Image (cartoon, rainbow, N blue to C red; front, side, top):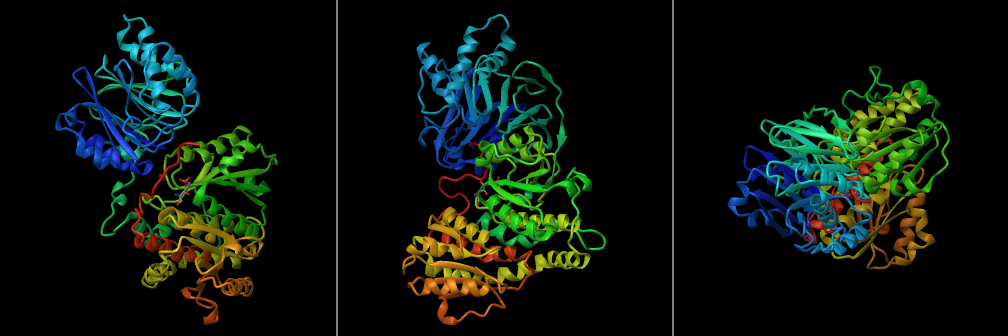
Amino acid sequence: MCGIVGYIGSKKIGNRLIEGLKRLEYRGYDSSGLAILDQTMLKSVKRIGRVNCLEEALPEKILEANVGICHTRWATHGAVTEENAHPHVSSDEKFALVHNGVIENYLSIKKFLESEGYKFVSETDSESIVNLIAYHYKKQDTNNKSNRFLESVRKSLLHVEGTFGIAVLSQDHPGQLVCAKRGSPLIIGVGKNEHLIASDVNALTHCTHQVVYLNDNEIVHLNADDFSISTIGNSSVNAVIQTVDWDTTAAKIGDYHHFMEKEIFEQPIALTNGMRGRFSNDSSTALFGGLNISEDELSQIDRIIFLSCGTGWHACLIAEYLIERYARIPVEVEYASEFRYRNAPLDKNSLIVAISQSGETIDTLSALKEAKRKGYKTLSINNSVGSSIARECDGGIYQHAGPEIGVASTKAFTSQLMLCGMLALYLGRMRNLSYSDGCKIVEAFKSLPKLIQETLSVKDQIKLIAKEYADYEDCLFLGRQLMFPIALEGALKLKEISYIHAEGYPAAEMKHGPIALISESCPSVFLTTSGEMFAKTLANIKEVKARKGKVICIASEDCEIPEDSIDSLIKVPIAHEIISPIVMSIPVQLLSYYIAIERKCDVDKPRNLAKSVTVE
Ligand code: M6R
């Protein structure tokens, strides 16, 4: 996790670095820091807390520098302290470094360097790299001054195991910045008489829209007017400059109290954008422009493996139900972090689909790389154009849901559900799904934004329910079939942002263990539509009531629920089953949002979490 921004150029670092850092806070927000070169003196300031704490602590003089690096941290090695915050300075005070990633062999590097007299002041793995650079710098030929900095970083990285995106300043080379990456994202921003480096393109677009995405094991040497890329093994690399054309104003909070609130309420438009231009002229199937797999190849696929983490994993479960039902292709859903190491035997005609909002989740990225290494075709459903996962896959489907800033995923989730449904339709129509069923499904998708708008009107009712339930410390979410993944998602949302212990189960599983939790102090949220599972879900509701458990029931309008079976009822519009999980997600999101507000939690930046999880 963690975010990095670096600047070198003719302008003052001032807003250039701080604005970039603020845009990276979603990557981690427990502490932050900045280092600059003032003449030939390295100076750094670090603070615990959010970027605004750092901003307040920065003397004007520092902001006037023309070269600097900064960092926002999500702690991995060592507690949240100023010593552990980045930038780290080498014990000879010649180098400052910011790092994103995890150095796996840092203990052995540290031991060696300590035996050479280097002192360590933090508990981090990152400090081992900056001291290793100082060590190699000292050992090098002093006549070759300009490359000595670059070469000492290169030499050091040859000994480093693990993942890194780094930016390094050298006291002896005030007009230079050296950066490198392996496993963690790093992008160069190319401006006029200035260059930037950042771990996310959004941290650059306030200065330039010309960018270069670095590949793993590349190292960059930058000054104000120029930059050169080579591999860590010292082969030269041609830079490919790309233009990013998205509008970052979409990431502004507007009149909302929180980004999460904004993102919940803008779902009708996010869904509209995700389906635009993606239905056939005869409105009987979906179309995807970027799959890069021929229809012939797709019709040969006899198994699909979905990979993801967290909320995206719940979207995968919906994909499993829908693709198996409509396209009759067997689907497996894997936690990316488990798949990577499981060495699962796969058939030749398996297709791998990764789902990731950020496109940077390292577990998902690594699992994809593993699948590619074994020769499988890979696709992704992803919300970040140009992200590492998008670039790694053979093809994919961009969500076009717009930037999601709140740590708890909302609009990105529903957009993933929609695209999974559309993929099921597309694959189904290539097989046995009839023209008329295809048309009905397309019609259902087209009605979705309006239906979601209507569903959002339950907000006032949910606000009242939230007041009533905000003080509970445990909660179960229960649903069957397509409602089960939404129950999992409901539980995840509630625990993420309100810190209430919540678990999701298939409703029928409750009696196999979780029922032991049911009591007056553990309410249950049931999700149901009027389909074939309704009567069975109702029976499960009664089992909870019989044990004095409170029940909040979220049900489609056509469900007839006896009043004495439940304590609170939230009705949502009737929807085609393929879109029903999307409709049902809305009250679940609102419930967790308003409960978190009642509990005065930091909704957009919940404790211990980060938006983009770039460590294993
Ligand atoms: O960016 P990704 O979709 O790959 O992220 C995966 C999870 O880290 C993410 O969904 C996480 O669970 C969210 N905080 C859920 O709200």
